[in-house]
Length: 184
Image 1 (cartoon, rainbow, N blue to C red):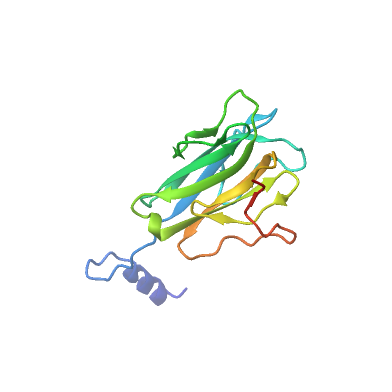
Image 2: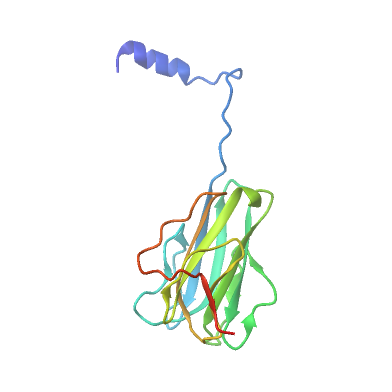
């Protein structure tokens, strides 16, 4: 960089209150972890589309905690469909546990939605790995992901929050077209 360009860059970087300021979009990161049969709680939270749970071990998810980080005015709520219980009556929120403790009951499906003043600026997408079906397609904004009426366990989950209208990550070839499969 020439001396002229270095000075020009330094002057351009000064904070001039008369310069128009471009608004920045709030950023959001979704953090989640699951309670896995025989393993217990994952020690680290997964983030932004990473898989939580196990692959190839046929272990059920028994509980989940989901929370958000970032500068948006957002919260997150979720409820699960639990073996022998069905859908939870109340939504859990912002890191609370959904599922059961010490009962050995599998999660079969999940609903997730955003709350807060900025909820209309974002979409939450989530997909699950269900016993005998494999990875299901993305569900969105409170729709159900998983199965009901089969007695199949969830084995893994991926969650991502994106700006409104942005598409979720691509699904792998061979993914089921449906996000929720109901046998009732």
